[in-house]
Image (tube, rainbow, N blue to C red; front, side):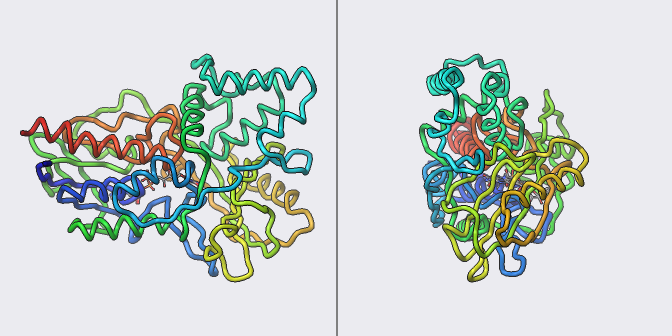
Length: 403
Ligand code: FAD
């Protein structure tokens, strides 16, 4: 039996709401959100009948089997996630290949090297202290494919991605498989969280910007007193508002650009990711309407591209992305709906993989969300790993200490 605690949550992004949904089962929860809408970078943004998003590409990295799906089931959320089939294909020399077919594109020596790399990665027999780029650099195509994957999934180049993270990501991939698409898009996930919190008598206060977090005998969000505070606003922003300094290292944010495209004809035949290792900037794209037609007006497809931001010249980065799109669509109909760049205060990741901070600051203050992701957790999967750790700590370790 868990003792009821008063828990204040700062921020109603995916991390704060998932924590709220799970914790409100046994505790009194109040969520504070500065914006007039919930979900932060993981909700829909309707435009001309297309369900664009505030950030995410309507994809859950390990689909219906990963950490987020498990946490959703634990919370009692009713969200249908359709696993992608195949996970992805790779566009090389204008032809699409499955991952295993890529080896056939290599000459004898390179193929032997590439098979050795893939085997080492699968067995985890790799130097953890190098970057993914260094690991792949002997095989040109492998490096390009690696860059497309890390650019799409982590908004990092392969050289910026620590091998230690790739090893954990590979383990998760072998355990859970590839991505999936939630029916109704990101907002379906967010709506379920807020329904659960309200059903459990939790409160969500919108348009309330928290200015102060204090942890002492009790924990405070401005003048509200709680037993525990959970912060979803990133480690750096949390420390700025907090009476204690806890950051020993500074997480490194990652930057990216997302372009949303309307097309009648469509460009992808499957429900996975089309990785584009040969593009100048675009790392990959998806066509989520292959799974959920409601994400676009009748007769239309919604395609979203993602690219990591390589230089600080945003205009040039966007122009190079648009040139890639022109080449990819070559002769097909398409219309650019929306171009979004993510950097500074609203990055793709507050902490790029490998620079995340531990979730538990002390018994009164916890971090969830991007910036406090679990190891090897891609985006919302990492967020779910962190939230599950916090919930477990509050319900079991902390509860036992207070008895
Ligand atoms: P946020 O979404 O940033 O939420 C934080 C919340 O806190 C916000 O609502 C904010 O308004 C609120 N807040 C901030 N300060 C205060 C304050 N002082 N008081 C009260 N409230 C405050 N992930 C995937 O899994 N799949 C994808 O396909 C995917 N694609 C992506 C594509 C792009 C272009 C981007 C940008 C991200 C993508 N991600 C994807 C990542 C994913 O969207 C984020 O990791 C996730 O949404 C972050 O959730 P969060 O809860 O950590 O933070």
